[in-house]
Length: 95
Image 1: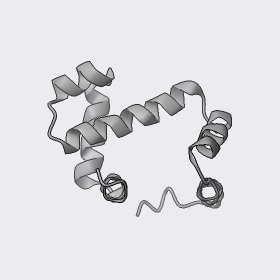
Image 2: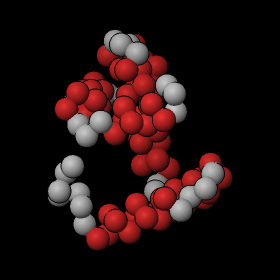
Image 3: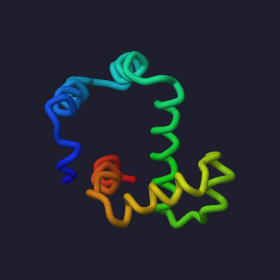
Image 4: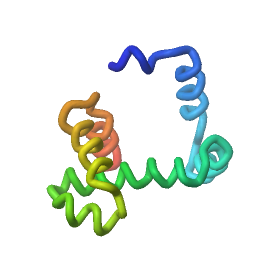
């Protein structure tokens, strides 16, 4: 786990997220926490990760999501060398 990420402030944020019970709670909290642009960027990265998992080409991902190749590469690096967070969520969502 990335120790630079482990701070008391991040713990507070994650504890807050863990209290959310449904999609409506998520919309309410994340609408207050994030800008629309930030939230859409996170959603885009998750879609990119799903498409990379399914072996979609960078070109097709860029065309479908509007993500830059730099973003696609960053997500791919996380899938290959990250903390397996994406994979954990994919498994829990049966994706």
